[in-house]
Image (tube, rainbow, N blue to C red; front, side, top):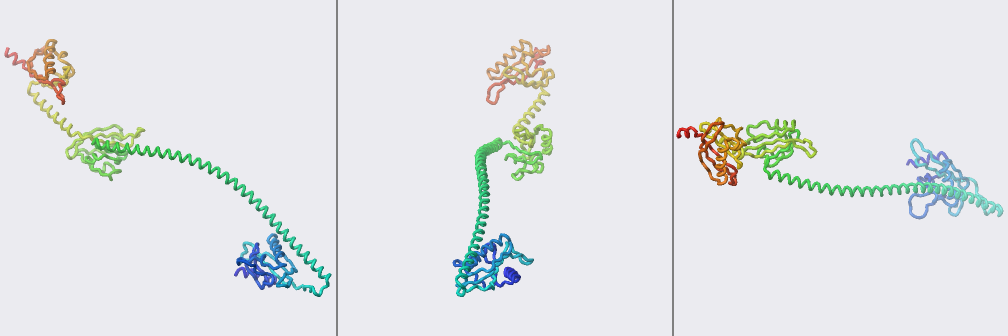
Amino acid sequence: KQLRELTEQTLLRQIVQLGALVNAQGDILYLYGQTGKYLEPTTGESGINNILKMAREGLSSNLAIALHEVTRTQETVYRPGLTVKTNGDFTTVNLIVKLVTSTSEISTEPPLYLVMLEQSTAPRVNESEADSESNDHTHILELKQELRIKEEYLQSTVEELNSSNEELQSSNEELQSVNEELQSTNEELETSKEELQSVNEELTTVNSELQTKVADLSQANNDMNNLLAGTGIATIFVDHQLRILRFTPTATKIINLIKSDIGRSVGHIVNNLSGYTTLVADIQEVLDTLISKEIEVQTTDGQWYTMRILPYRTIDNIIEGAVLTFVEITEAHELRESLRMSAERMRVALSIVPLSVFNQDRDLRYTWFRSSDPAFSIQQIIGKTDTDLLQEQEAVALNALKKQVLESGKAVRKNIQATIEDKKFVFDLLIEPLRDATGAVVGITCASIDITRQHDNKQ
């Protein structure tokens, strides 16, 4: 509808009854009036009709030249008195081609052109009535006009070809430049490809090394887990905030730990330690001072453990937290308590009986000594021999008796004399071989009672 309005408005201004609205290539956008005398459809497939192809003989070349000139100069072209062959007859027409200007309501982008056909009122000369000379003269003029039109058309075509050639030359130069850039880009891509291939090879090597390290770390982790589980030592790892990082299965007997406790503070978890309430404070002290701490603790089921708290150090000697280990010492603790009780009983027994008990090794050096007699001092005896303590004859006789027990492995009981601090004593001495767990004699155990008074009374 807009094209119709645009065509009609332009035609009305020109007072022309026939016209066609076309683009720069001659494609018809809108036809107005009975144009069949000047335009005829082209044979072949129907599509966009082109006015240059539809123009009849006598109009075609002039129309092509005029349309080209208008598109170049944007000025109206007027071709009067064109003879157009129409159905065996000839019609005189005036050709007008002008640029269509835009209005406020209608835009003409890209530029559009109006081809106007105005029937000429100039009478044509009847060839049958004209004389031969006039007819020839008219024919010559028509030929000259046709030749001029063709020359103009050829000139226009040459100009178009030159323009196209320049554009093609420019395009060729641009394409050549683009080709050079593409060649350079291709070389850069080839270089990048080689670099990427090299990087890929390096990454493959690094990946293989990482896989090897992962396998080694996995193996080391498995070995560590099996080691910690196999030793039966309860172990707990905590960070600087006392949050649990990992623990061994044995640790669950001492502190009520489950897998989901990882990340929780050790102070928020109930432990099975009886009478021990300073766990958090002791861990914090080790982290603050970096001094290890060792404490004997007992669980609620009566088991005894040696708890060690140590700083957790990395390979680079960086403190990352603390390690708690619990080694069961129930049997050792009971044995130690039993020995303590035995020693206490012996102390009580020795306090009311003048009895001395001592051990000597195979070199007859005193290694252990207990006595209620104030005359004997442990500091004076431990590490020494009878040769260091007694007179020579007494030491020789006593050493011979003790060596006999070492060699025979049989006990000996005998009264002996000994001079201590210039005083003569008589002792009832029992010498027993001291054996280790394998039954080998590793020294002697002796018990002596001071019978000096009884011996003096008998004499």
